[in-house]
Amino acid sequence: MGRRISTSCSTSGPASCQNTTVETDLCCFEGTGLIQHVQFWDTDPVTGPTDSWTIHGHELRSCDGSYPEDCGPESRDYSDITQLLQDQGASDTLSYMQTYWLSDDESNEDFWEHEWYTHGTCYTTLQTSCLPSDSPTGADAVAFFQTVVGLFQDMTTYDWLEQAGITPSEDTTYKLSELQDALQSTYGYTASFDCDDDELYQIEYWFNIQGSLLNGDFVPLDAYEAGSCRSSGIKYLPKSDDNSNASKKRSRLGRRKAL
Figure 1 (cartoon, rainbow, N blue to C red):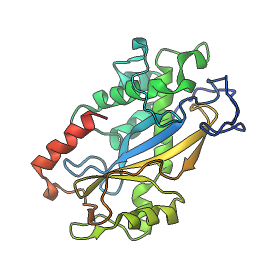
Figure 2 (figure 1 turned 90 degrees about the vertical axis):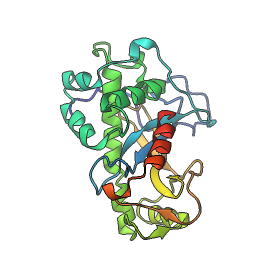
Figure 3 (figure 1 turned 180 degrees about the vertical axis):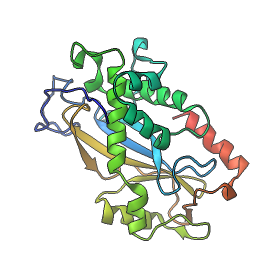
Figure 4 (figure 1 turned 135 degrees about the vertical axis):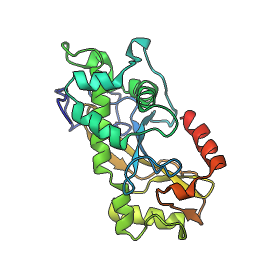
């Protein structure tokens, strides 16, 4: 994933949200430490490869479940993520994002800028004061995107579901328990599944982290909360132009703009 910022933070301490005493070094302990790794299954319009989910983002909750956003300051509201990645030796990360981190309703650049400023700026371990003193402007955002891409490459949702016999289909429907059991048997933990009416479109994986987001170890968790899918009759549609539905597309895009 190109050059990475180094940090001397240990990964042997308590994981975020699992500490029993107050942690004061919030450069090495993630103070806002309930992490949602979120992936899309976009079918209308189709984004990404037909045999892979794509990246939504890396959202953050406080340990009490509250939802910080836009943590600023405005000087971290970078306007050209593409250029930052290129200039700081992360062109391979950018290339990967251009295949697997895609928007279906705005430019990819706008989508990336939104995900960074809305969520990335809220990590205590990514504050600019936590970076090496010689870090260039935007190094915090570059590290964020490298970390999200690196975790996504390990979270092979399509393959895990396929191993359990769950594949996209126009005709087959699934129970929520079947989806959860599939992940439990392949990944080892449950996740939150979100649906638009009866169509599966999003999955959320949950983590704490030991150490800094720069080089820490993600600690997987069972789903912190239920997703929006019903208990049965869930459609996992193939990525095909044949399932275009204008009204559902408008509904999905409206919801995404709020995330």
